[in-house]
Image 1 (cartoon, one colour):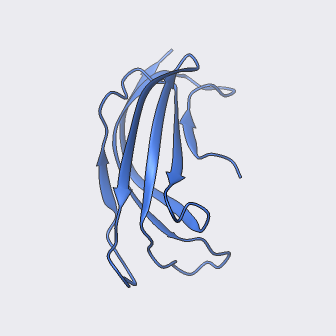
Image 2 (cartoon, rainbow, N blue to C red; image 1 turned 30 degrees about the vertical axis):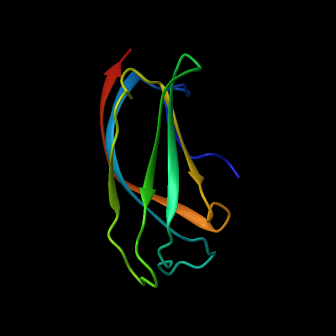
Length: 113
């Protein structure tokens, strides 16, 4: 399985680097079905890189509550993710094998080459 990431080094990219400010996220039990999954607690470690060197790291938590069948996404406010060209999202904690990470409403500023 590939680590989810946002990066600037790909063919035809016009972005040099970006400032990642925030995003909303949640975790659900991973299934192959198209129906909505059941929310599950998880921790997500976000790691930022510039020129392949780590410049920032922060862990954020999602906790939907016991026996929740639905839950609002949690907002992650990031600090120190300025001038990055690659950001990775890794699900950590007890449910890392069974959890699927959902990300929405990513707030960032992009800087062109």
